[in-house]
Image 1 (cartoon, rainbow, N blue to C red):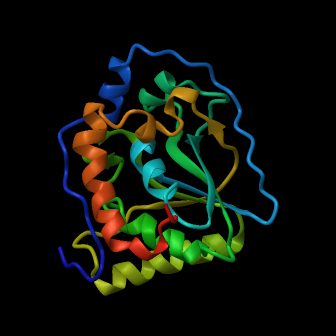
Image 2 (image 1 turned 30 degrees about the vertical axis):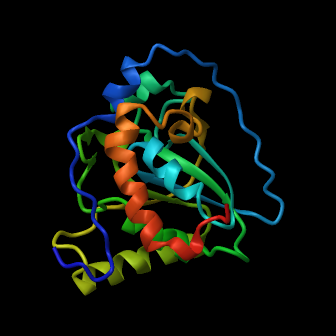
Image 3 (image 1 turned 180 degrees about the vertical axis):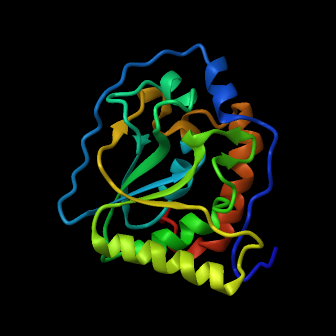
Length: 215
């Protein structure tokens, strides 16, 4: 695989689904309300939402990141239902961001650099359509930007394999249980966070140091 500025994260033999099913903590699904005044929305699927949420919520210009589900045919799906792969939903993050600080193209660049968009229905040990690579666009501008970036990456040979990222119109977002929100920050000592998320965050933070929120 050629680098060309693209960071592809290796396969790690630990499953997001397995780790979640081992947890005994219960939570109640509760709608999280975003203040979207002067904000735009972006919705990405890039594998386990614990990982993607941990990355994007560190960016300057991002107001809020929610973990949840999009792209399926079942209303108000539960986490257990989504993990069967039969709901059609992908695990996604729903991002409210300030376009005067961080553009959608910059979000796309980070999206493609922090997961593998060439593996169909799989990220590392997480397998199933719920872990597919996807951009759920909110307007034609986002649609065009996503398709243009995919075409450019494919033509450049940035990846050995062709990008399989789904580019689909956004329909509805179902927020996941409270337990899944801000998962990494609330569970930093948990095995999946230590083995899977930490290495991704370290690479991301080095590559996008200038775009991180000030401490």
